[in-house]
Amino acid sequence: MDDVSPLARAIRAWRLRVGFTQVRLADASKLTKQTIQNIEVGRRHPEENTQKEIAKALGITLDQLYAGPPPEQPTLRTDEELAELEAFLKSSSHLKIANDELEMLRKSHLHGRRHTQQSYALMLMTIRAAKTEAKKAKR
Image (cartoon, rainbow, N blue to C red; front, side):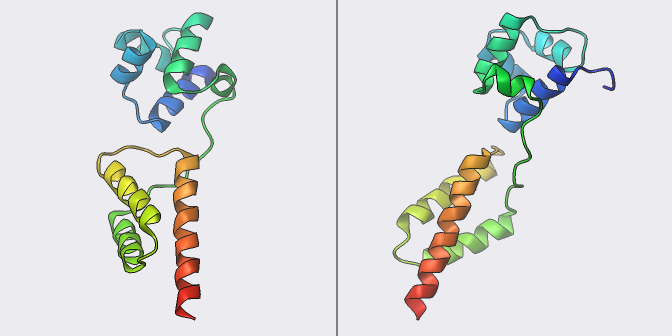
């Protein structure tokens, strides 16, 4: 994969970031799986129209695609960490929204879905706010 273009690397990285398989990206961009494979391994350079379809299917702009791979994302929590957060939230009666969000995160995690940096950051902020409120309530 050393001779793969930066664009091909970006397409693969973005595809993995959003949790798409090559088949799912092909379906969403109205291309074939073979075309996606050929692009990702450097056997084919996509024309601009194809690049636009791929970016659209990934939910990003062409500028984002041209900028290269997406920025690093926080790693997903382990099952133990999720269980600990879930126990904390269930012990705080006034945090139904945070609890609902944690349940959504847990279900997505179990199904192997990746979360965008924004959704993960929102979840962490919600949990931090919940912990702060719980500390204040104890005082």
